[in-house]
Length: 208
Ligand SMILES: [Zn+2]
Ligand SMILES: [Zn+2]
Image (tube, rainbow, N blue to C red; front, side):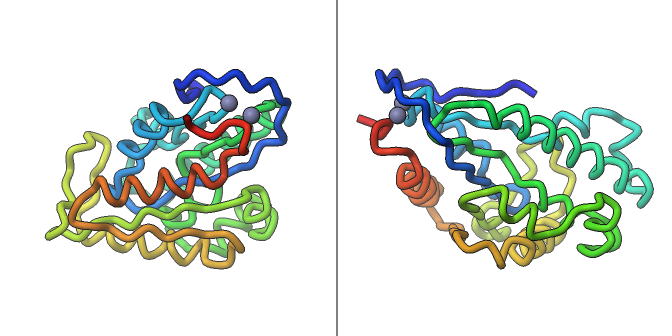
């Protein structure tokens, strides 16, 4: 996993207590494109933790529809993200943006939330409390342009909608959650997300 820093130069020297935000949503919601815009918009004190799943699922043995392989993959994804988040705790940046959160695995887990939490020996509240805010990008419908551009995206539009719905439910108890609906113009959706992110960036590091 390569940590990515946003690229605007900023002279702030403060050792921040970072806020943690999860950017999540169903397949095809546009997270990657939004993160690319964020990278260009914010300063080097805004850090992006990339999606653990895209690293783990390059492993063929874990990329299978067998329930045992699905569970194994989600456990590895969870563990990788957990460890990387822990390493990031020493980071003095202003905002840490996680591409997906530790609860997202429930949407891909064969037997649902309770079984996921039991298997990982963790309480849901503990995972909800790790993040200051959640931003959920809704998956567009077929009419709005859901597609398979991403080569690791194997879901049909219907499966994608189900995963989107499941992730929506997983995070619904988080006290600061933003749900960003799909729009005919992706730019509007992206602008909405960038606005939310900007509201979480400390004043000393606001984009000029
Ligand atoms: Zn700052
Ligand atoms: Zn800064």
